[in-house]
Length: 185
Image 1: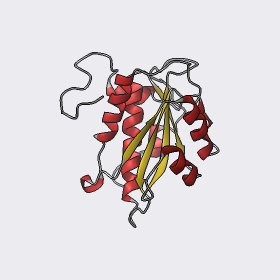
Image 2: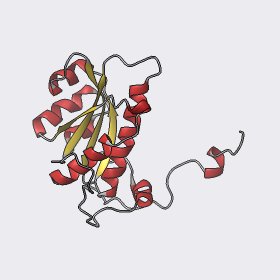
Image 3: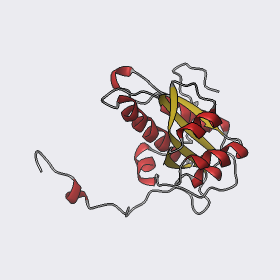
């Protein structure tokens, strides 16, 4: 478990890939190997979430780590596209105030935390996939959330069942020059 200090949580170990390699390697993984994720690595991923940027340093989030198989199977029922949660080694539920402000600041902050989680996971060779939450009440019950909080997103984690994460040389993305504009459109 993280101690809360600002020391290097990785202990200086060379177990991470570079940030650029993590960005190029990250892909949605929906099928996971039947292998647990090291609890210390889960703590590093959660620390990345905690350190995410936040509008006016509001930090509206809480994170619920779920590793129990029965709960993961039930949690997968909160959204039609969350089936990957059931087979994950762990899933992080991103929790926010039930009443966000008019600018949706909490959702923006959770988006930043989501990417921090996914990049930290990729840097450790751990696959991830995000999911929305349609049945907020079921999520509230499964996670024992207080009434003023709700589960906004789920991020499943685990080692890919098919192939390890490695940099993707030709991603299925629109060409750079088609989406990047300089100075104006």
